[in-house]
Image (cartoon, rainbow, N blue to C red; front, side, top):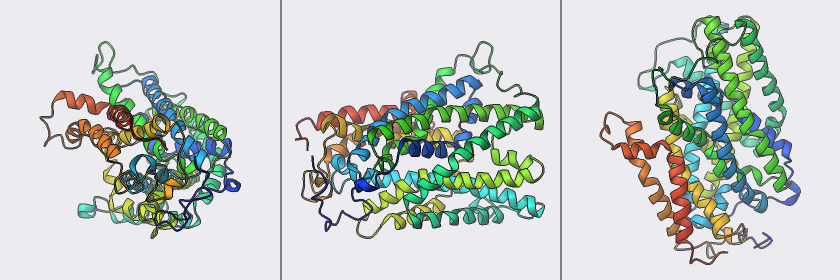
Length: 488
């Protein structure tokens, strides 16, 4: 195991943002990781997760339980992958070189980066929507207008989207330390805001209404009697997939950890229970909106726009700040490092962040979340089918093949132990392709049901738990293929 003292800083795959973090700068304690997760959890896409499950027929308890279970499951690989960052001080895209090769790591880095770009765009759309709502309150609806053809939104929405998008550029220029600071400061405030929203709902409705006590549609006499497992398995997979991007690139944060204990404790405290708590609050508040407004309102931006007085603008402004913080931590740091690893000599952290911001616009994120069906069962499940195999290969490589021992110098050496065949580990590439293939028919059926209506039920069932399928196949296959390869 190398110490990093001999890392070749002249290598074409080295740059200062990818280099091992100096021990003096590994200052993140458990409270920073807990605050990071609370900050990322308390966001509008997380708030809306339970709505998709309830729309599929679950009761409030089933929906919250599914969210909790999904996050307990994804916490395990989160901690295991995070170990490598805390031990070696390098980001995900560098750790991936041991499995995929010093050039092959560009594949997982690119896939992870593109998915993060989609999330970056989605969060920009959410924040822009809050600005749009504030603007309409202040101008008596002057921002409303006809949609702009193929773009699919009106001019006011587009301008507000870009206003919020532009706010990110300052923090991208300042780097990841500025992001840690803003998350640590705002996390307690977010908890207070969510609890205040819960109190408002209870006070206005005189309770939480009927949604909390409504039975599952899967029970006896229900509209979907006996169909619980049909909805639960893809729903659980989607909940796991929600944070599966962070499960892969969590070394981007744990590389700054003071110790393994800090990253373990902080993540365990900051992820599962806050996610389940937010899911409960979203269901309770939405239940109250049925009483107050006569219909269920799952979108907190829409809800804030219906409130009265100055509290409306304040609430929406807080949503803007909250979404900005989440987007910086969850969807900017990772892809910025990924693009830097793909083009080490041309791209640093800041440039990688700017590339992320540009692609996030091109992906037209408002189209990704037009419906809960598209959001959960196409977007979340779809990228889970890609990230599950990547995660499986990384776990197998680090824990089963190398027993948590890497050559730090070798990770930056084009002719070192991770050079494989021209810089690519063909075993990792083969395991990835084979693990993804079973999920492709089901994804095509989910994304384009009219065109791929004839996909056999077997492949549709596999796709329902795409993340688990890909993770299992890739882990077993990669470990078997690497059995005769010397561990370094």
